[in-house]
Length: 142
Length: 178
Image (cartoon, rainbow over all chains, first blue to last red; front, side):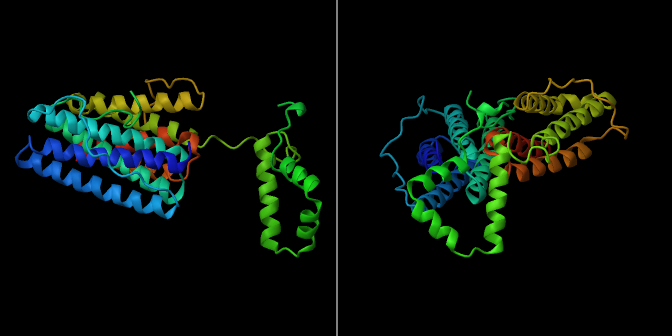
């Protein structure tokens, strides 16, 4: 696995995250909806930064898929919060996997993303009443 | 490591290239090189020999450098110990922060396993200072989060994922405790 492969995998996770927040946002309101919007914006930003970086490195960043199927139907607030946690966990895994094969600025990009996704996952767990909200090894495959 | 396991490292590659393309090597040798290039070559050679583990410079080399994770093991055990001391003095703290203390022990055990050290004992020596309260633990947590974050940026790739998860976990601790 090289850096471009893992960063491309991270890009795929970011595409899915942006789409997923669009789906789950419709089931949230109030502060949770605001948090979802801000999370979606953060994923968009990270996605765009990755596209720029991969393009500059001579790779062809894959576009988003037209549609993504959530692992289980999003029908209410609880299922929306569960999807939000799942989105962040999946992104955390992709970014963590990029750490061993990157260095310098790319390592920092991956680490910042891992920290952000871990913090958002913990916030969503708290909103959803999951305890403990913190996991020992964010991004480590289960 | 035995002599028969001498790897075919950069020197081997260079020798092969020289055998195939003698003209190239001669031309390169004829060109004057700067001190920096010469130093770079030496450093590169030393690194290659060092990696081989049984090279020319072994006699001059001291003990092997400590594993880059070794300091993190000690620091993580110390951090977990600070929570244990705080809980012993103020048991109510364990209700809110017990899961965080557990994360630190899990980190210490994972780091120990990664560098093939024995599983750390949970009965740690007293730190010698007064038990910390919630604010003191938060301050320690912030420093530990930053230390792990900074270390991930330069640590060898083999340890980057483990230490990255630890850095991310500590960042979530800081948020939960703040």
